[in-house]
Picture 1 (cartoon, rainbow, N blue to C red):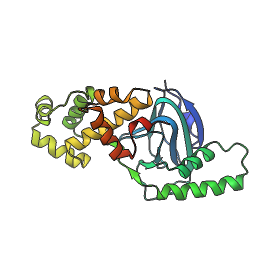
Picture 2 (cartoon, rainbow, N blue to C red):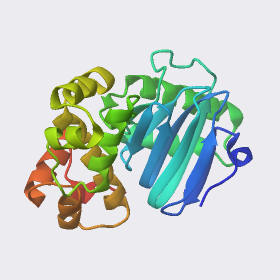
Picture 3 (cartoon, one colour):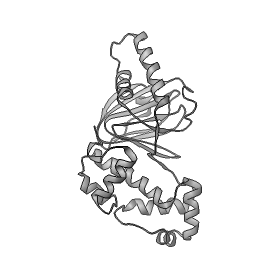
Picture 4 (cartoon, helix red, strand yellow):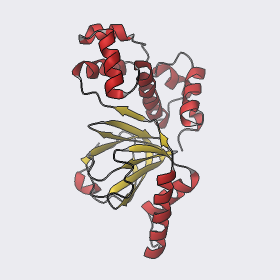
Length: 245
C-alpha cells in the first residue's frame, strides 16, 4: 500500500498507519522530524535506510528524496521546520526520543486549537531538544559497488544463515580481501559490524509486527535469544521486550 506525493507535501502531520503501508518517494522544502509513537517507521533514500522504533525519531533535511515504510500499527508524527534549522544534520539521522522530546513531537504534530504563539514556543523547545539529542547507530548505508550490493542482498535473503565473507565473494565474483575493503571504504564498517546492523534493523521490524523475541532472534541469525537481547540492550539501551510502544 502506498500514498501519493501530494498527500505528504505538508511536513507537519499526524496519521495512523497500518503495518506494511508505505509513503512513496517524495521530498519537502522544509526540514522534518518524524516519530512513531507506536510501531516502527523506516526512511529510505538512495544513500541508505534509517529505522526508528517507538523510542527513536528520524531527522530528514530539506530537499532529501525519501520514502517511508511502516511496521506494525504505527502512530506517525511529523513536524516541519524551516530549511537549515539544524545545519549540523545534512543527512538523515536517528536520534533518541527521550520523554520530553516525545511529548513535544506528539503535541506539535497534532496541535488542534493550540494558540499559534504557544505552538511557536513549543516548536522552539522541540528544536532545541532535537539539537541536543544523541545520534543513534540505526542506519544501513546503500552499496554503490555492484559486487558489494549483491553480497549484501545474499545476506539479507536469509539472515538465519551465517554466510562467511569468502563464500559471498565466490558468489559475486570478488575475493574476500576485496569485499573486506569495500565494506570499510563504502560503509566505514567491517562485515560483522554491518551484519549486526542489518540484523538489528530486521529485528526492529519484526518486533513491531508482533513477533516474539525468541522467534526474532532465530530469524535474524543470533545464536540464542540471550545473545540477541544482549546486542539489542547494548545498542538501544533496553531489552527488545520493551522496544515497541
